[in-house]
Image (cartoon, rainbow, N blue to C red):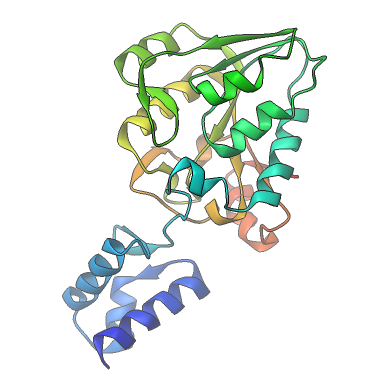
Length: 251
């Protein structure tokens, strides 16, 4: 089999099964594991999959620019945002992450809501200017322009002074075994710090992020309290998350 044909078959298996194992592929194609690992490296370099120990997972498509990500799963993200906004109770202190879905969530918070929103996203903060009874606490630091959020040591220091009811997290990938992941190391540290300062973490997960992975791990999937998912999420794909004790909220 030609290398190009083998790579196409690997991608087909990944799409069908949600993951591929290097050892199984080597046996299936009657080639060495080194050959398969080279194929996986080259496919990963093209952004077509995410390598993990022993094999590969689907690469999250949610790693483009902020503008590009606004065009992905627009209906699903809007539904998730509305549902997440409805979960905020009066008087709560909530953390809203950066990212396109979280910006939409802030946009859908009722004008009459009285609560405190902590965010390291200028975009989220701007959405709340016209909410008279929402106190906005901005986490400052170095601006990470890709996601339009504050990162770095100053942000970590400020986060340590927060105690919140709920953290609404955006990720580029959530997988039952590979966990929560994102495309930037410093952003992963920030998300981990925010998780530690909230009583519960709710992940906003549009369909393309479920069972996908990105290079930098935030935490194990079991650390999440619940996931808000859209209609595009396949029911059977939720079973491993339910088995981890994660609540599934359909938008």
